[in-house]
Image (cartoon, rainbow, N blue to C red; front, side, top):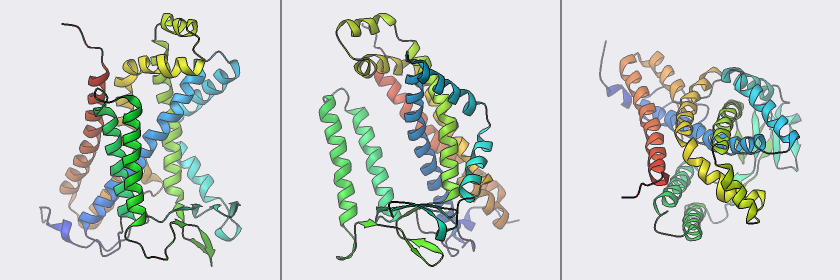
Length: 336
């Protein structure tokens, strides 16, 4: 049995049905594995963003004085938190794959289409490398917001970060294209399939929706615990100063709660990133699925398992490092 990592330069002979970068049956194992890692990072970070936003909304609803909002949010948490995530992914996958065929697809304004091939929508005419550049720009903008907290005012930090992201977006959008090429690609039905635009395949959509709804139920409870830990006296002081409920939440409650909930939030983020591996059950080609297929095709079990563990260690330690760095910057400093 051959050992070593020389097999990474060999061609795989099998395609990947979804990838940010171009992958064919003639691609090497190294490129296919890189594509799988990017797929995992894409679905993972989108899940973290959407689950955090939805979890924050659920937490604010649960601590509100409105009975209906509390009932809706509590029901959501109790249902989605107690159903295994893989069952939720299967549920959404079954719904998406039982939609009509492309010729009978549901349409919304001749721009958005729903079919058993996925969700088709207009999108900027970007290549896979363009998407990676934009993702890097967003990451750098977030790092700038965190690292410049003690040096610049809030308005200037946001203006610089958003401005840099928009500049990179315009550069990527306007360079490297034909003069007559459009900036927006719109899906069009040609024959038995749609061409153009952005297609969210059922595997990707089911995994994203399932992980987001499941993760939001846990993140919502973490945020709710943080909100309830804020001293009520500070909230009453905000009301005495004439602050609205929105201002109290934005300026007092959420900033103070963030310190209390950050450690638990870090653990949940890392768990959700590892939870992307359930995508193999619906055929989403994430890093775990690509490594599993590569093991069956190449027989390099130990090497590929080492790459699999190394990839997840790199991703999760990066999340932990950024969250710990944020925790260090916002923690209360003792006076000397």
